[in-house]
Length: 159
Image 1 (cartoon, rainbow, N blue to C red):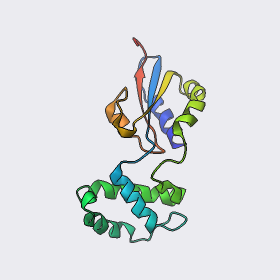
Image 2 (image 1 turned 120 degrees about the vertical axis):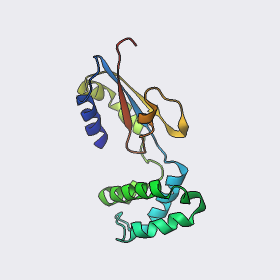
Image 3 (image 1 turned 90 degrees about the vertical axis):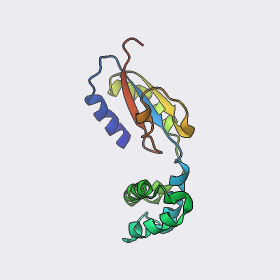
Image 4 (image 1 turned 45 degrees about the vertical axis):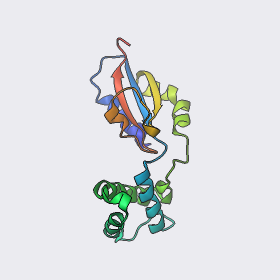
């Protein structure tokens, strides 16, 4: 739902010559450091995905005590705060370390709808797991996380 809303808003802001096209970047797994944080978070929340009020306060010392995580404490704290909010909104399933659905298959099944609804000439889906080379803007591809694809638009003129 969020993807479609953000995708639609992205097309509205476009200042590209028609026909417009899009690359959609997909991630199915988190990087290793984030997986460790998610596994810790799974031990701290209840069955509904709710955390104690002191969670963030207790997280920092835990991160700093883990040699492999200590250097990345600040970005991992931000990640954990974001995932805490996701978990409290969507439930403990939001803390899964691997996406339990096949995003690509869902998007491929809805490709015709996406093309028509967004008035696109073409759309292509690209997995970013493992640092694979993908077309388009590298900066945009790095924004993809499991369950939240990112996208980049381009003009298909001259392609």
